[in-house]
Length: 498
Image (cartoon, rainbow, N blue to C red; front, side, top):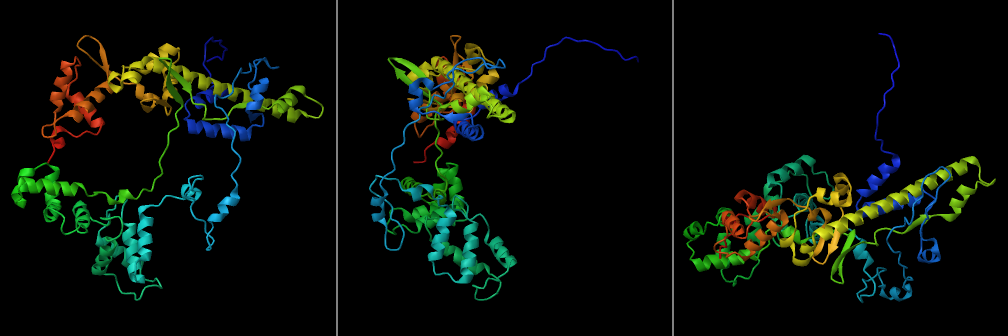
């Protein structure tokens, strides 16, 4: 074949680095955005935090102009947050009075200052709590080795997750070369079970149980022997009887235990007062707090959405470095000027991306509030059907952009804090040709279940019939799907035993 040249005309969409940065900032959560801003402040000398005084002097934002290379510069690209002045540090001399003779400091309980030690220390786990009690127990070196292995085998709920045989095998396989042990004889199941019984007396009550029945029995045995129906509760708290109890088979329970209805009810009430997961009383995790991106208030009878200004600091261009980059004085060599020019351009694009993110987020939030005014006024039952396409069409953006904006972003309303995705839901048809959102249907199901008689719960089929009388056409399978998504058990498991 003879080589030849050909010309073709075509269009190609290229994502520039600046556009990639804007897209990446758009999908960041508030915490991730704060980290991104902090990294930008540390890496780019052109960026700095602005204070309130500079804002009052008329320098709070960069003005639009055309740079030498024709690139546009952002207008008013500072963040919406307000930088509050920090108070002066407290007088520490008064705190030294809390020092005790041993050199440690007592916890301040007057309410004026936080307990910094309690706030910054690692949360105590169930294992730590049990290990501390084991150290206070008069265990020998051999028994202490057994106790450590047993405590390591107790899960977060307080149950012994390993069998005694496995613990014994593990101890013998590891060897007894600990110098604290009295002898090197093989470990026996009897001594392991004896140490387990000691640990089962630790706090919280019921810890170390091998199943639910043993956990309940451990808690029942510490009750006052004069407790009414205590013996009946001990007979009920066995593996076989608890299985019947879980299946609501009260007829077989009364037959096997030879209880009358009143005795069975009182025994069930006593068992319901126990803790089936004793380890849950020792919390090892710290609460995770959500900071909303948008705050919704009702102002003069109208719902208004505003950005949360506490997420990030106000940013501006450093005036001194900017003048050095533009002036090109003899004191600045070519490499320095090139570096400053590049950093200035990156800083302006970063501020522009932040402004674009905030502007897009606010536009989307306002449209969501406008579409869901009924929810804000009346609750979840008045939620309107809404999909991403509706908001994308209203703000004239692509659905993928709306998806990025509403991911990991939260809105604070008088009815609680919700992820922006919460306001989007599918819909089902109504008798009059309208639509009803899935969120409203879930709320109706929850309301019906909460008001149902405990001795005769409403079935999924009856819930569908009740909704049909309200003009909502929902199949029984749809009711079951929504019910399961809210962790509501079926009607046969919701029937009260007492």
